[in-house]
Amino acid sequence: MAYRREDIERVRDATDLVELVAEVTKVRRSGRSVMAVCPFHQEKTPSMSVDAARGLYHCFGCGKSGDLFRFIQDTQAVDFSDAVELLARRSGVTLHEDAEASQRRDRRQILVDATTLAVGFFHDSLKTGSDAGGARGYLRSRGYDGTVVDRFAIGYSPPHGEALVGYLRRRKVPEDVMVTAGLAVRARTGKVFDRFRGRVMFPIYDVRGDAVGFGARLLEGGEGPKYLNSPETPIYHKSSLLYGLNWAKSEIVRGGHSVVVEGYTDVIGLHLAGMPVAVATCGTALGEEHLDLLRRFSEKVVLMFDADEAGTNASLRGFERSVPGDLDLRVAVLPQGRDPADVVAAGETDLLRAAIDASSPLLQFRLERLLEGFTLSEPEARGRAVRAAAEVVARHPDAVARHEYAVLVSRRTGVELEVVVKSIEAAVSGQQKTRPAAPRGAQPLQGVEKAERELLRLMLANDPGVRRHDLSGVFSRDDHRAAHELLVPVLAALDPGVPPDLGSLLGDDDSEVAVMLRGLAFLESPLSSADEVVRKVQVGALERRIEEVRRQVESLSPQSEAYTDGFEELIALERRRRQLASQE
Image 1 (cartoon, rainbow, N blue to C red):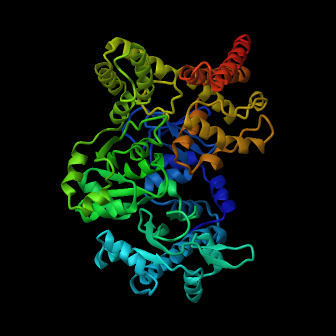
Image 2 (cartoon, helix red, strand yellow):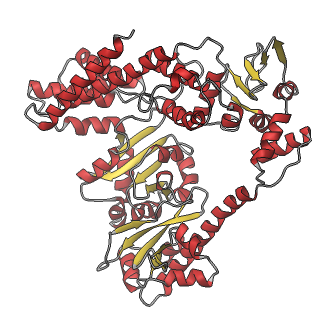
Image 3 (tube, one colour):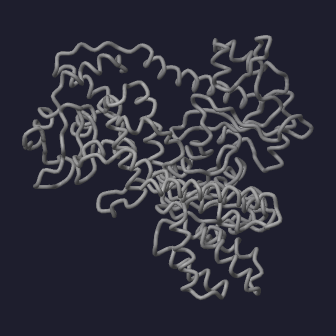
């Protein structure tokens, strides 16, 4: 059940968070400060601070934080709606259903239902359509019989423009639903046509098994791009979807690893070969959101590609700036010119298993490919190779792993280990790192990152001194940038000096950014000077940019126009840095 926002805020205003906490744990008051024994981890000395005025709590021991609704959710194992209902009864607030919110939830199901109808239509068109002979022939050429077609719900979109639209109309699906779901397009005249025509259709399901879109392959002689995916819709987001994960997730858990391949037929091939752990992206490079999905089921992810240049590049895109430290991310290489589907069709499934067994860590794979591009018999080339390798190794978050890769680079290049280590250390210090907020027990932030946190504290207080500065692009970390983007529109609606209502803004948000901001809000140390903090952060941003441009210039020919442009930018950046430094 979804309730009106104003009713939820009335429940918030009518509930004393301190009293609520006191019902489940020991609370100690000292003046305006309220500390409680945290109910979320074992402790004797109270470490959870409770702010009744803002309706927030934060434990400095385990990091748990939230508002009164989150407290009820976590202590009584209920969802948000149940928590609202429980506290409404407790405070005597009458709740009213939010029809728009309920409608939004219903809207998703309407789009899923329409997509599910399209899956059935395309599937029937493939099996019974008189114009589907070419599609059936293509699937037979890949070794797919009727059992395979049924198992993966493969279909065919007829070539004339209103086949699916006409079918959905007869099933009482409104035209705006067809368009919103990505099943149809509306012409300038207002007429609606099928989006997919004359293609083999691969339904795409989300992790729950709901049909949310399609991948479509053009048949021989057809017009248009060879591959066409559903557009971004309220239910289809390619950056957070993996083809085949709905079928593979249980086996991934049992087998302890997933295999990422390039195409839908590769996924099907591995599943048919008795390796139902394969998934594929939906027309985009593998990214962090895809890894977030996979790490739910296993910590080992194997990227499988053929050995040609396109396959190699595909395995590297998306990890140009960082390497996930919490995943065993590996690369399995097949013989050049052969993809998994081809290997399965040839009956050589043992080759796939051998490639997985012989897979190498992603960073090692990148380094080997990188070093192959240098003439290591030449001193200057060895120097360039070490610097380039250091930039790659520096992206790994683990110091021990970086050292082991330094040993590998030293052996491959013949450069002394000490020299390689120093090169990697220099790259680490110069790179813009995007680490998540430090967990309990981690080293405290230092330098510019510490100044960025203090700047966020000033924003939480809506310090007038901060409002004078443009802070776009100055933060070095993803979580700091996200926090800045969250706060800017809220502060813009307030007069300087008037702090935002953090209870409403962050209360039921349990993201890392919200947890970080709640923790900052509970710090009691005096705020620093806004101008001084902003200056430190701006200097840090300039230094990162200077280092980035310097590395780019060093890799360019002095005779090139790009070298001249980069050198001029370096001079301007250095001048600006000196100006800021002189203000100390």
